[in-house]
Image 1: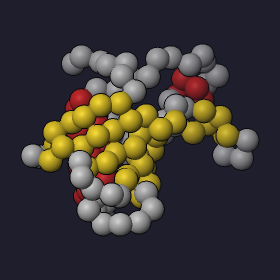
Image 2 (image 1 turned 120 degrees about the vertical axis):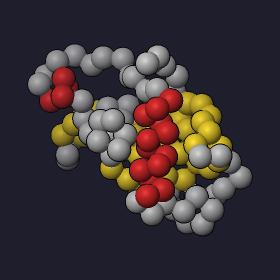
Image 3 (image 1 turned 90 degrees about the vertical axis):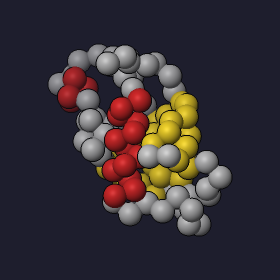
Image 4 (image 1 turned 135 degrees about the vertical axis):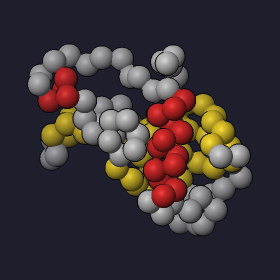
Length: 106
């Protein structure tokens, strides 16, 4: 499985085109401790965005240094499917909807 260091791109999932980009890298919050990375998803020609939040990497919780971000096409596709199955309606209007996924994007 090829890993990509890209911070955005386009993906075809089940016949629909989605644009994605990295919204936040893992970071430490004063209020909540470590937070994982967040990616933003938008279906082409749609208005409502989905924000997909990953858990913080275990290496950060153990006090180890940050590593490179590792996103691949399969993980992004799983994120899109997880957001849709959780109720994201890309063609509806409104604020972005936030979804939490596991480290694999499910």
